[in-house]
Image (cartoon, rainbow, N blue to C red):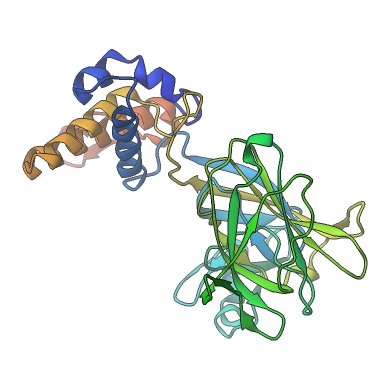
Length: 349
């Protein structure tokens, strides 16, 4: 079963998971078992439904992927061939980038290929970031924190980064200076009297009941620009980030705000996100695999590492069976005729 098929409420109703967990299905401990089993399995492979194709738009050379993206496996700009993905230590060459290898390692940021696109920029893997748009300009902006539910008024968000003058964001608390600036959601929301923020590097926020939004406010033009959208349970938002230095050389379109945008396609592996509410979707929804992974965790807690490993391998085997069932084209039936032996060797798939 693919990700986003079953919800936490479905796991609570599964007899197999309930029996193995050994706790009441309506407790937080049950949800914790499901989350821990999912987290361990997600780190052990790319299972059916956890590797997906997506399409996104970017308005600059920094591409920030949505919250659910854990690893970027492949990338291309629309109307171009595959994009080379690299960082400071490694480089994955696309078919059209072989001829541009020297350019890539010499730091020009792109390679030239002879494939359909003719020109393929490189995507450079970067660190994670807490916003999908960084602060514009160099002089800094005021920040507005907006919530949509009345129950979330009074919730706080703390921003870390720099302010105008390249100084760290700081504030006084009980007469003592500490890093970060805390904003409190108000009604109506207005730009907070913060320092002029030039860059946001980390965010810590209280969980909310509804969506929350972060904006920059330009005191000269009096315009707002969205920096981030946070889901209710995001308390430490962090998103995969990639730089594409040569993006300005590729075709683009202009949106209604006169911002240049590029459309991209990517193959990504989803990252683990814990389920909390009954309607949250499970990333691993093979209940047989989840039950065995929970059994592994219980053996681990009891100090029985041998059985813990055995049941985790059984859980992985179940997920591999699911992959085989859902993707039969990935399996090959092999027959080898051993010359001169009069024997036929055939694999059991």
